[in-house]
Length: 316
Image (cartoon, rainbow, N blue to C red; front, side):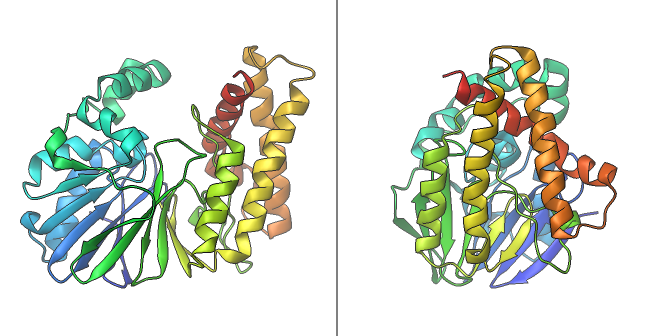
């Protein structure tokens, strides 16, 4: 059973089945008989993508591009398997991430060290390499065509140095990966979406991230297609708060460092608790009707990653 949603504009949202429902999405875009897959999820997403293509009446041969916004494995873990099974596809990936798709051994070793080998194998499995000649890396502001539509690629570091966002002229929206934060469906209410910044290790750069948010807003997009999760309308109204969150989390990390050294394992755990208090308070203001335990269950994994990202940044 696949979880899909027709968004219009020739775009279908597919749940990648990563960790829980509504955690991560990928997007199937079609125009004039050509197809792009934006984000790939993990190995477990690959059969779901093929089921989605079949449901849409599309053949594997029609897939022109596979486009992960960056090479973190919830976005790009399925790349190698997809490329193996899609003979006409070109991988479109940031130039700083391309080498990890050609030779994923360092990516695999690093993720195995973080998650443990057993958990890595269960969630991600062996990462398959992609031939160099099947990869292109667009420069900042470079454009590619899919059918009759134009996709524009913007270099957007901050969450990671190997991150780009993709602007689609038809929907007037960005596929924003993790640059424009997270907005989980469970936290959306009559007051709108609840947007959270994500500062995942190991390449978090607060100034670069704020600059990237500004860069996206300069294009005056009507919407964002978030990997985590779904369509976010009227992003202009949320951009200032998102940038403010970057500053707040950095200030909290710096304040805690006065009491606990960032190298101390207690630092990350305490920072996660501090972040939880901050975001639970914001959710209260947002009018979230979930219980505190339910809210915590939705956001706590990302708060741990945020704390780890700030810990790495503070230790540089």
